[in-house]
Length: 379
Ligand SMILES: NC(=O)c1ccc[n+]([C@@H]2O[C@H](COP(=O)([O-])OP(=O)(O)OC[C@H]3O[C@@H](n4cnc5c(N)ncnc54)[C@H](O)[C@@H]3O)[C@@H](O)[C@H]2O)c1
Image (tube, rainbow, N blue to C red; front, top):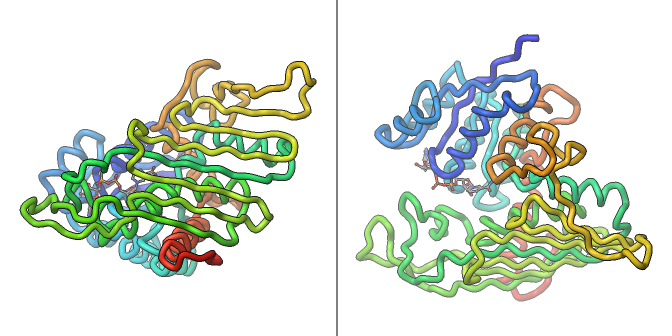
C-alpha cells in the first residue's frame, strides 16, 4: 500500500534539530509504517545558518520566520526544536492552523503556558506529542513492561538522579545562541525543567502520578557574563542543582536529584525502583542494559542480573540489528517518531501527549515552588 505523505516543518537546527532530522530520514527504513514524513522545510532565524543545515539533512526549503512556516499550506506537521521560551507561541499558532504538533521537552516555561498549549491542541483536535525520548530507550520500555507485568509487585521506592558537570566554571557565559539553558528568561528554569523533567516523565510513566513534593534548589554561581556581550554580567536565575522528595499518589516514596555540578558526570540519568518482589535499576551511561533483581529466584542463584536489551523480544529491538548489537541515543528519537506515526488515526495515539507533559510541568512548577516556600507542596 502506498504510504501517506506527511509534510514536516522543523523549527531549530541545533542539537534536537539534528536528532529529529535523523529520525525523519531513517524512520521508514526501519519501521513499516503507513506514513512517510517528507522533510519539507527547516526554519530558524538566520538564513545563512539554516540553509547549510537544510542542505546537509535534505530539507527541501527554508524559512526564517516560524509564522511563515505555519502559514504554509504544504506543511502538515510542525516540529518544535527551539528553546523553551518559543514553545508556547509556536505550538498554539500551529494548532490553530490545524497542524499536528510535536514539541521538545520541557513542554513550556511553566505550567500556565503548558495549559494554554494543551488546551490549544485539544481544541483543534490535532495529533500532538512531546519528545520525552527516554521512554523509547528499549531498556526503559522493558522496565515499564516488567512493572506492568507485576514482576516487582507493589512499588515502595523510586530513586532518580540526573547529573552533569558542564557549568562548574563560573566563566561559562549565559544566554546567546548556545547557552540559553543558563538564562532563566529563555529556559524557564535550570536543571528542574531541563533534566528533572525527563526523570519526572519517566517516573510518572513507570509508577503513576506524583501527589506532593518537598524540594531544595541552589544556584552556585550567582552572576555570569552574557554570551552575546561578554563584558556585561547578569544575575543567574536558574537552579543549578535541585533535590526533592516526592510521594506518589499510590503511596510510593521517591527521591530525585539533579545538578550540573557533579564532576565527572556527563549525562548520568539513572533510576532504581524497589518493589515487594524485586527491583530494577537503569543507567543511561549503560543504556543497553537493565538490571533486575527477582526475589522469587531460587535462593542459591538469587541476585541482580544484567539484561542485555538487544533481543528481538525486547521493546523496539526487532526493528534494529541482531541480538548483541546495541543501539544508541539517536535511535530513541527514531523509535519515538515511529510510535507517533504508528499511532496516527488510531485509538492509541503515541504518548506523552501535551496533557501528559503538562502533568510533568506541574510537578516541575511545584518543585520550584517548594524550594522557595521550604515546605511540602501538593502538585
Ligand atoms: N529530548 C531531549 O532529550 C532534549 C535534548 C536537548 C534539548 N531538548 C530540548 O529541545 C529544545 C531545543 O534544544 P537544543 O539543545 O536543540 O537547542 P540548540 O540551542 O542546540 O538549538 C536551538 C535552535 O533553535 C533556533 N531558534 C531559537 N530561537 C528561534 C526562533 N525564535 N525561531 C526559530 N528558531 C529559533 C536556534 O537558531 C537553534 O537552531 C529545547 O526545548 C530543549 O529543552 C530536548
